[in-house]
Image 1 (tube, rainbow, N blue to C red):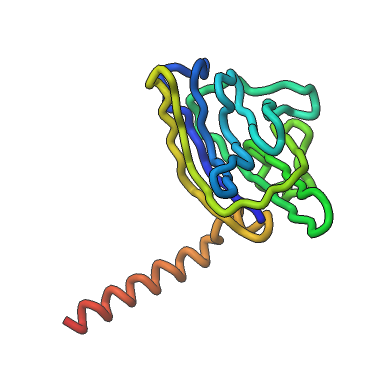
Image 2 (tube, rainbow, N blue to C red):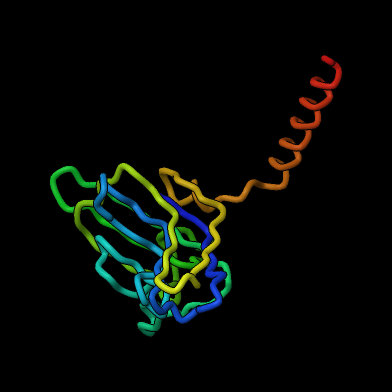
Length: 174
């Protein structure tokens, strides 16, 4: 399963003191995984199943401090019937490289454990009321391409023509 989303920290306090935010998966009332900004973290991070850790680049083990840019996150949940589930998270992946071709300069994290969930939340919270995140392009798919594919121009033209025809049909029916 591949959830993905765009997230942007629009807070006045980018340092992340007393803040948390991100896409969170829950199983009942228990948090399974959070992706975005762990409580009081200064960098983009994960929490829950993957532990409390920063998203880092394998090429130099560097993290990205909180900023106000929009970032694209992809989560891969690989469920295993008789073993721990595997979770991989990418931030700002190279969309032309595909899942297996991601360069080591892409921020990421991984972990394993029970990833079963029955609730999804987009959250942000703060003790100082200065945390404000924006979310967009929320997708859930069965493959990497389900959540990163952008329609080809020909498909967009077809969709526009179909919508125009539907509008004309609706107008003619009145």
